[in-house]
Image 1: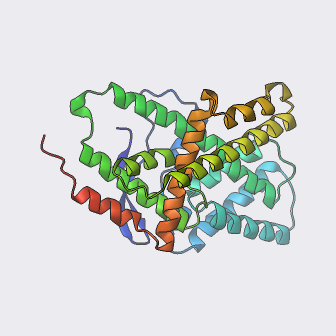
Image 2: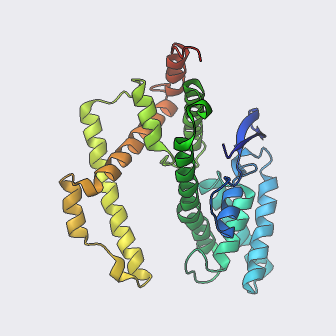
Length: 302
């Protein structure tokens, strides 16, 4: 295992959270290592005294302005800092302070794409690009490595089914908290994996018609994403890399194998989000339901 268990103080007391370390044997660049390790520490939303992260963010903003070498009036810096802090509390409360610092550090050096001037929008884009591109790519790289490593482990080294279920319960609770606390309106991380686990235990409440609608929504989302990807390539003067949208859309509509896996994965994530929303609204307590199922589950003995 590449994660060590560390204790992190949250608003509800002390809870165990895996401490992120660089997986042994995984080749990573210096930046990838920094991004991966930056996940350690408290998330912004976990600070009871919000002045603590706010003050740190203010320092990071000032450092970024100095790194860029621009001159701003104190009133401009105060306004800019206030806007950035508000954006982080609203849209990126799941970030650690080190992730925020690193996003600004990479962003101002042009490593997160082009930007024009230092303003609230450019800082927001630094954070968004860090989250959606850099951090996601590193997480995917680590996840693939860990999965391959688990496949290669001997049976005696594999976690028990009870341990696996316990990890999925933590993942489910984290997913609910991420949506509830405002980290995101759409829970994306590991959504398809959560779906399979919940569905395996017969706890997915959706009808066949509802599932069809989720597949339809997933197809629509994929089409929008492909369109945006093409526009981004065009802006970056990489038009030669664009795909034929008409051909791609036809394949998606006709359930072509090129896109089936992506559509299915998206539909599962939509389903997980729907069950989380129902949980938050009180229509169904999915956490309690899954715990009751696991409590009755017979794991046998080794």
